Amino acid sequence: MFRFEEYLQEFTSTVDFKEFIINMVIIAVLTAFLGYFYTLFGQSVSNRKKFSVNFIPLALTTMLIITIVKSSIALSLGLVGALSIVRFRAAIKDPEELTYLFITIGLGLAAGANQILIAVASFAFIILVLYFRTMVIGKKAFRSHENMYLNISSTNKDLSAITNILKEQFTLVELKRLDESEKSMELSFIVDARTIEEIEETKKKLVTFTPDITLSFVEQRSIAL
Image (cartoon, rainbow, N blue to C red; front, side, top):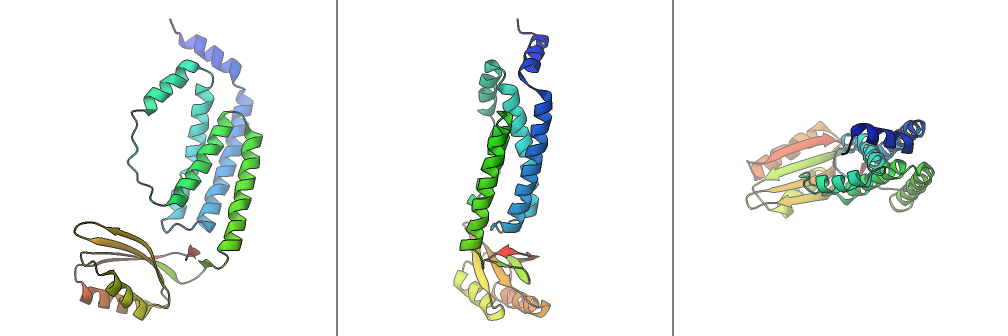
């Protein structure tokens, strides 16, 4: 019969708690830096700062799970069965978000397997690759002022007309996302809004064009264009 005392003794003998704590601290620091890097250089139009808050707990939780199950085949099999009934409903539509989640999980896996040097070396290399990619490919892809994220929801699906109204007011208009359902359409734009008057005039023209429209202007500093 399985007894918890026997498992605890076996677990204690296979896990060095000092190394475990050190690995947790290192992974927390790496994922905190990853979140800062993603907030600064990411190209997603979503709230990057809010999304990056999940990196540290995700990495630490992954590390904890791997550390526990690697000491017992029975627990490993039990984990497979438990995860098979878990369903995640949150939709991740931006591939970049998924990439950073995989980096975070990978760090947690490496730390849980006590391969902290590999985790640090891999993290440093990945960050360098992402940074140089940003510098080479997207050197001019960031503007540090006056950019706004404009979300439009309307039952009028005339994309061309809505875009033309925006272009009449803003020097920069770039469509970032389009979601269309049977009854409505949602659009996400990046616009170069310099004055309140430009925003107010745009709102009036859009409301005149389609009265049921819903608008959301959000300031986005250092947003990817």
